[in-house]
Image 1 (cartoon, rainbow, N blue to C red):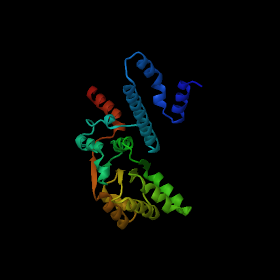
Image 2: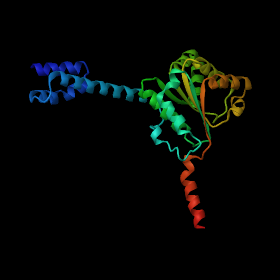
Image 3: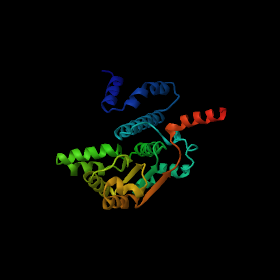
Image 4: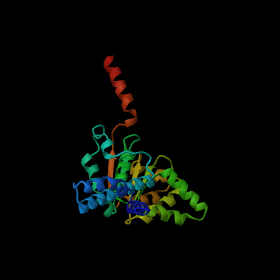
Amino acid sequence: MSRYARVMKKLEELRLNSLKDNLDEYIELINKGKKDVLESLEELLEFEIRHRKSKAESQCIKVANFPFQKDFSDYDFDYQPSVNSKEIMEFKNLRFIEKKENIILVGNSGVGKTHLAVAIGRECSRNGYSTYFITCHDLLMNLKKAHLENRLEIRLNHYRKYRVLIIDEIGYLPFDISAANMLFQLINKRYTRNSTIITTNSSFSKWAEIFGDTVIANAILDRLLHHSNVINITGNSYRTRNILSLNEKRQKRQ
């Protein structure tokens, strides 16, 4: 086996795939005197670092379980003037994670709460923070199943560990007391330890009705709202935008 073949085999064994893919090009550049060895090695290593970082980011985003791929640039701030774009873009610096702050997005269905939660979450994932997205309904189903299997504490600790946990759609369905208690346990475990992002279509004054218990609702809110960023969105639904636009055109014709 030639020295070249041995080097390529070792690069493969070490999984230096980007370096391996670009090696031939740089050998040719060195032979032509267009680059020296150290310059080539530095650039090849930089390729490998960028490749690994990109791969790690993709894996983090995949594990985070996002329902779709949406970023800040995809959000139409002009359509939702109640949303302070500067305030939202501040979340890109991710200081809220280090400060262990929560983010609560409140608004009617279709105003882009989940979109913004996903955009923030994707930014967290890209920067190496363990992030997980789950609807409130699925979360509670998982916790109830774990409770029946005598594994509730293990499951609660699983969700507790994420630096950023996104719980989507609190308030769309009412809770029974058991579910409300389990959600409280999770929020309590994460309190002052990690950041939680919540989306809800219900004002906080209605949470007692949703949870079926004023004490539990207040206890959850007390922990969520302490060190929290609350974003109220009061615009129209994106889903009905085209319908409203058509209706306006019809009215103008009439």
